[in-house]
Length: 490
Image (cartoon, rainbow, N blue to C red; front, side, top):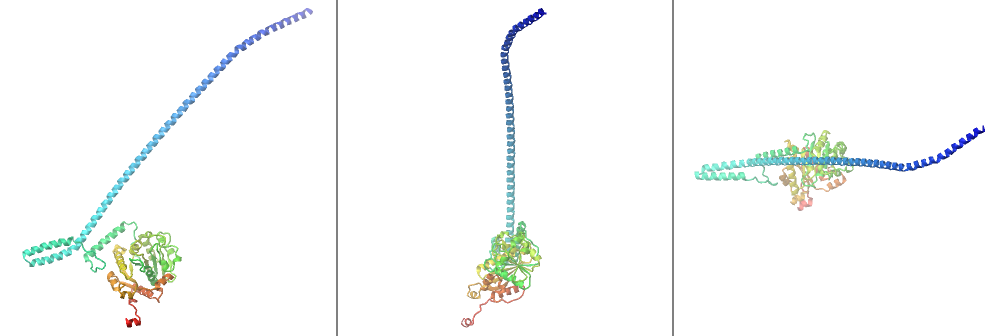
């Protein structure tokens, strides 16, 4: 038993010594392994870094290639856009050039057409002038030819030959000679042939001018009687006369409207005393900014009388033939018997439109040469440019109203007499209104002078209204009323 234990101890000791001897050898092997592994790890790390760098370089190259492709694509798109813009500009430039060429061609064509029209008008005017000259010269040539032929029949052959030569020379001179221009004081009347030729030519020209105008007048016949108070010269008493005559007609029971055509310088509302009651005016009705019954003002002193005032802010170009005709027709449909038109002086737009629609015209004048001469011009326009003349209706009935007449100055030859004025104008006399301070007083008070039956001027206007209605009333206040001492001592 003891031997066995010793053997076991000896065996365990041998094993421990073997174990101790083996441990240094293993440590040396581990150190060699560690030493040997470190360089390999460094080499491996370097290899990994190289591969990482290679991958980074490849990625950079790939990014660079992508960037280059993007730049190329951007440049290509920019070039395409630039090409499209240039093509568009070229197309627009080409279109503008073609448009300018077309406009230039149309302008040339219009100029050629206008030139052709002007030549045709000139040729027509020349032909009409030649016809006039032939129509004027033929009667004179025939008379002279007959006289010369009778003289040649009684003379010898040689004298007949000379007379015939003289006759032919005189005939040629009479054809070439132009007819003299008549003056206002020339009492010589045109021959029937000359009168008919001039009237027909005037009607043709008026018809052509109205056909070309865009402002077409209304040529329907109205139930109302349209009376225009007109004059060639200003300040002769047209507005005072318009107020007095319209008031007189209304006093006689006739439904009457009076229209102020003096646009921009209205005064009729002042004389009629309704200036504060004006809301809408004549121009508002023409431009359809108000109805006619909104603009009409009933006179405060007289029944059956209505006033249509003019505009004070518009100009005379606001009046149109079509608009005025439409208003006159509407008044006629409202059963107005008389429409009095207070025309502005002269021959401007408002006056010409008023004269165009006139059935009767009261030409107002003062007893002086300049006023009478201008009135003669107005009468000529009535005979040529009214719608009655254009449409070949009965002519306008013109009547003469002589205002501010002073008999004492006529006796001193400081004013024209009634006979002298009628001789110059050859127009029936409607009335003679004497000069009176009552006219100014009535205008300032807003009442028509005809309402003052104590005034000579008011009584004279009443007589004029009676004559306008067809009654025969003798003239008053045309001679100087001399006192007893003046009659006695001269």
